[in-house]
Length: 228
Image (cartoon, rainbow, N blue to C red; front, side, top):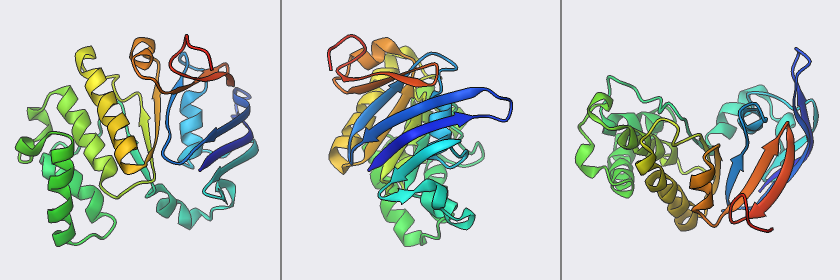
């Protein structure tokens, strides 16, 4: 489903963020992308989101070369992606229900579709009782679950979670990651989680791609310390 073919990225400053990345991620796979700050993880995500273009190589999604997408087609491509950010990015003047519904409204969904879909997603992330609450009435973990529901609302093929547990209590990190793993398994959705939390990654028996100084240092299943 996703393939990086010899991908390198050098910025105009001369800084090399990625160097000859070759990586395949299958349909419905759950993958951790880990590495220290500055390793190239954020650049990898920006390339997937078409916020940046590779200097060399190709990124193929479902047989489509992202470099060949016309500028006007990029917003439609991004609708296949569900993005979960570290800082939640919820609209403070909208309720939990309205925050999730907003992502449907911008794609032209009807009020009927919204009324049917949003409650189901809030139930999935265990927030049915918080539909009328505003973000400032929620805990960090609850806000991240709202962000996850919003990422799912338009039936994405791929979820990209960028440090999704970075701003929540460590005791809730496992809960958020378990939700992501369950969503991947139930919905056959490809989930890519970018994180630096080694202890959390080691608790899940998932594929782990380690990025170091812009290159893939290891690609294995079961955490940092297990064999491939």
